[in-house]
Length: 598
Image (cartoon, rainbow, N blue to C red; front, side, top):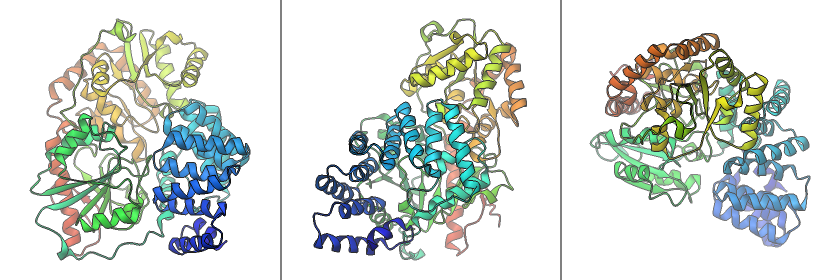
């Protein structure tokens, strides 16, 4: 029917599609496919409560129809009801084990929950039935989360073959994920831009709100709208809380547009953010358009998306253009390819001069590192090495990376270091049994005793920072660098090494160590990085000197100076606003200092 066709067309008239579907239901109120199509349409508009209700009607009317449960599960997943969503996908597969959509959706929700081995298995089932490019990419990422490098290689090879044939789609649900793509080895900045633009095109039907008159703004202070689900004990909050506390309230009035998971009011970061941000608006239950209208009614001057295309994104809100100036910062390490975003907040290392063509946004460069940090972060007590399972006399190499960041090449480099430095041990995050077993097998194949791999359980942030003090060096990953992990190490007094690549996501660690006053710890290629690691593992005096430098300068270096960061960020926001007030288009901006390049 026409309503269903309009759902699949990213430029289709969704209001007309809804009118047609509801008219059809007037004639056939017991028609499960119409209810299920309505569920899909409403989910695409982030009208999640209505989508779930429509999906439940479809499932009740057709309890043996697999796609009804798969579509309902997708709406529940979008609402954050992950266990209920997983149950729906399992029911869909009980009804029809060949339902490729249900296998794919099961893989997605298992990734959300952190059940990476089950996710990998589900994606394998999905792509064996329907090897769509977007599914292959997600499946390869799930393989990397489970340290199944062979599976990732197979899926990525098929993906590359299809992309060579021009198999990119803008249909909703079939676009390559920009976040997963930028984490994929071999991904270039140019291709990251293409994938991001393609993904953003899904929101072409989000009509912008009528343009707001400049004279309509309130008061003298700029009203800054912050859009995120991470106003809580989360890496983003760990980084930005101190800077938000330091912003001058006479110059900037902050408004949080929050879609954080429920039940987070008690955590310390949530409480600090509540104190720093004067106004809070809960938008989780709002559609994109409703949230955009609320931002417009609130008189937001500059809207900043702190999530980007990461898990749980709500970028569709800003696609309606609620604010005169719109930016992205911190959550997504690359271009969003979104025509509704004017600026990306960065620095001269992650986006060096001359690299701007790889970004749809104009670049607002801060003078040190784009990543803020918080001097108020508590460092817990440092246990004895024996309590952490570490040998007392070892050179401890910390590599606390999520498993998808640990590529075959990165791990092989680490093993070569262990082979040449018998006193060194590798300190890794604990993870799924299958992933750990794969890493142990790789070590054994390289002739490394598995006892030299030490596993650190996940613990609260302060406890983690405390134990980090027992590391001698922190190793980088590639192509996705240490990001918050690098700042953690430096704050804990551990020298962090960096391997610098060509795209934003692979230049973050170099930016961080430079802002910490240690640019000599950034290497430009894998060979020089490996040589640097070996040199420092063998040179205890040099390591001690680096630790002493960190201890002596931690309170002065730009990386941990939230007050200076807030001043520079504020200057940049005001420069962007001044261009808008002058009727000028967005342009690359260097902050502070007032220089606005053309």
